[in-house]
Image (cartoon, rainbow, N blue to C red; front, side, top):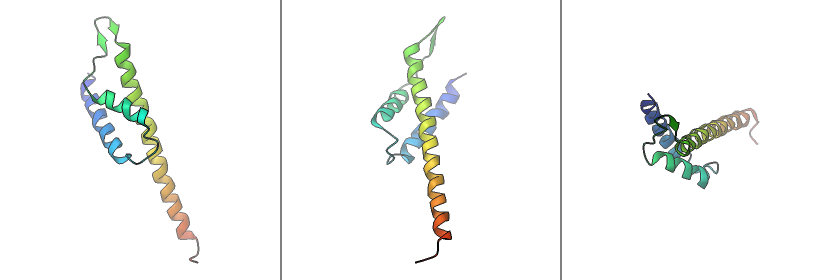
Length: 92
């Protein structure tokens, strides 16, 4: 069943939005995609048919989550490397 996993994803997206609020990578479009996804519980399948519009909302949120998470980790690693370089440089 998708709902328990989707609840976890929504919680993680909310945490990521809060921790990346000042990052330029959290664009207005990405924020809009997240807000759309978080706004309700979506149904992705009805009878024998997929509801493509709802799946698009899910996929945009999942892709945005992966992108923003990877950018956040990149900048955290960069900050750590910059700090390590500063330790190796002689004090002037």
